[in-house]
Length: 261
Image 1: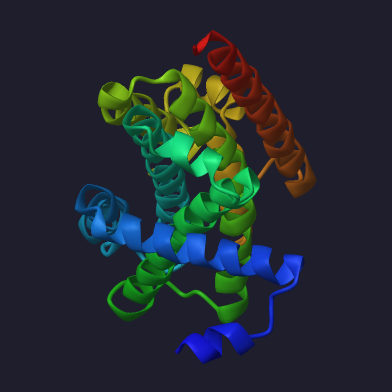
Image 2: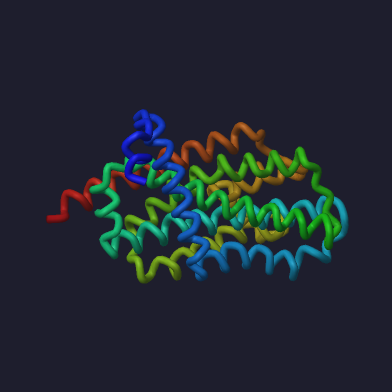
């Protein structure tokens, strides 16, 4: 055992960082999976909504719409609770300070949380597609499934930025309630559960100001169900939102560090 350690080839700095990143991702995913309040809600709520409202949809656009909408809903939930609530609790418990004191780069810590949250969203997407194709009336090709997965992966970045800001400004004990209080109405207004054109007129006017709306448009575009702006415009809005959220999170973090003794 000792000989094996002494004779092992030392890792290059790049390999060491990659190993640390993969281990951090593994541990973060296991932590989220073992946190039942997180895993059961992120995995369970979209599936429950789909079983209640999605299976009875007629074949064609309606069945595809529900899969796209609930997949986006799962992504937002996974990021806001996994990153926003998770980092908020780690800050309160002092675990975040220990992470900062370790030699692991801070970007690896955040990237692992983003990847783990995105993985949960992809699992939900796969379950929704499986239910829709086998028990519902949905038709989803492999190409459409791959495109939707890609949108969710890239779309996790702006919601990671939002989750980071939430973690820095929301009290840990109140974070879950505040996230639900804000995210559920925003999801409804963004058309995750029903087309925006069926909402009250004032909500239709407000929807384009929400990042969730633009994520939903991109997901619906996979099935040819999005009308209006071009996909590039939705990506530009999400990119601007990401920069704004990361900047606000950075300013908030610097100010909190300056105030701490």
